[in-house]
Length: 358
Image 1 (tube, rainbow, N blue to C red):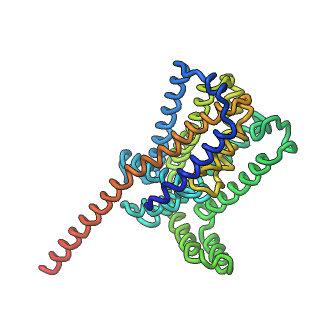
Image 2 (cartoon, rainbow, N blue to C red):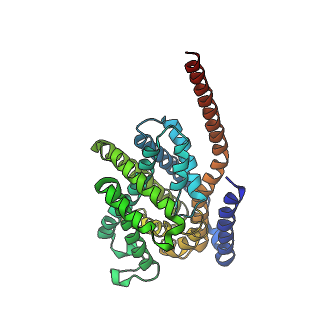
């Protein structure tokens, strides 16, 4: 909770945005943007998409926690989860912090591990399953503008393919550890932990292997309905994340509203997020803004000022808003954790005094 962890991603993001505005801002293009009723309505719809996305993530946590958390509590915890993602490198995400946060609640260590590891599988599964379907419908232009076949891909297109394969590998590894053979996965991790290059991570790797065994026993006992509910809520959350951005494109550009164009835009956004998932900066700050312009230039028809405005609003809604919300929500959550611990100590002290009296 150090202030530097909040300030750093803000400075990186705003610094890149400022540089891009300096390089690409065009006053004539800016004056051509009309803040009409149409624009305001679609910006409002995009904000609605943001709310639905947050509620869908909260529903997933509500399902995975088996209703041990109230839905209101899940909404609060998702704010903290999103905040932790915003101040952590995207390649790490908020999972490590989520483990800590949920361990402060009433879930056991095993259930906490299973919940967090399973969210990684669910998030990855959404991309792994939907992207091939989108590719079959739209073609390689889903990945890069003008690509007619996979051989035409270069630059970011190749980066996407590598990122997709890496995502599939680590998702399958966690899935194997959770549902197929947790014991063999634990042994494999133990062997890897003995490598000299991984010496500093040895304790973490051993802990991960142990947690996978505990999590597996819990997960494999769950009914199919439970898994479907978790995946559906995950799919809704991710879909509305991309639809939010589509609404901003409709608000500020002349992008077509026909089904094929919107599907192509949606597919491009999914492809972009696969690359963002491996960003080394906190919350993808700076990296996302740079990638946005190059990845979606054909949808803004060369109007880079509109593209910068869309990127800035989008990051403001989905990134900076969670940084600010975390500053408000987390102190209240910490006070609640301290109060519960104090109450638990008092109850334990009462039980000890009763036992001693008997």
